[in-house]
Image (tube, rainbow, N blue to C red):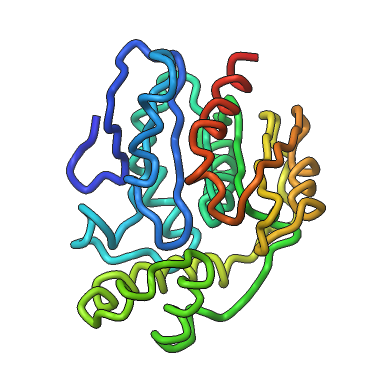
Length: 247
């Protein structure tokens, strides 16, 4: 399935699956964030995680710094895997990327996801803009620690910073320079938005704005936790996906 240079990572292939679930990580995240999901899903759902460039086993590929570049890289990788119904799940930055992929596939191939799951992210029309991709390494590291406490010691090592920050900065640039296109058609696929009660990055009222981007069904799921609620509540998140797709 995976060809050289591909962004696709399928840790547990399921050749007879009826659905492919493409998972898109947060800024600074990697495909391995979703490694454990496949074993929590039935044999008819195959998990295909997306590896953004510039990290893990794609260190040798420069990270993308523009949304259009990132989306093109991903679509090039998944285009040959759309032979069955597919689902998109994106967390934080990944939610915006998933939405953009859905729009491009609709326009270029006349294909839409069977379902779109967006997690911990406000919709394009409420997009938050900041400038962390232009700030110093110390300020960028401080922001990472604020979002994911407990990484202070790791980020204190210069060699670790040199490895991690180029990809993180590029991802932040993708997010912070993103400008939605206002005159796009509504999607037809259902959208499920997931958010956390203590998430300081977006509010439930903002998340509810995803309902205005589809003619299909919309639902919202609120779970306990912060911006990275899906780490301690992984099983609940995966069960939500499974139950939603079963319906």
